Length: 131
Figure 1 (cartoon, rainbow, N blue to C red):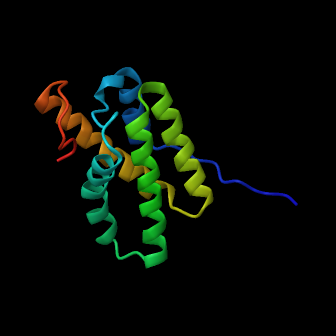
Figure 2: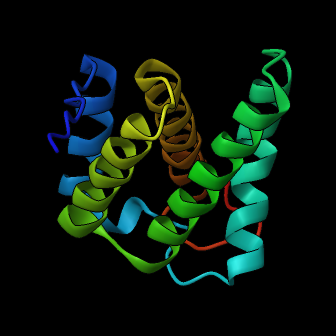
């Protein structure tokens, strides 16, 4: 039995966002937060975007699982390790049927909020990491 896997091709925005995290591992203010806080931060950013897209419930649930997996990566990893695992997670979900541009948009949106949060609060950690 032959299995054909889809190849993940990153957009320029995603490459730049991941490069930023590689160069600035401390920019991940979600690192070492509680699982509930990290997942809540992801839900606050991403769920309104997904719910506004009028996706079928099954597909919306798959994106929720994708976001939970991403939240776990951001909570437990930094720098190159985080970037590798984010790409791996996107590849996995691409082959499970999620759309690559949508996943990358969500990743870039979270990273943009992290970057903006770092710029306004310095390097200090906050419970409201993305808000």
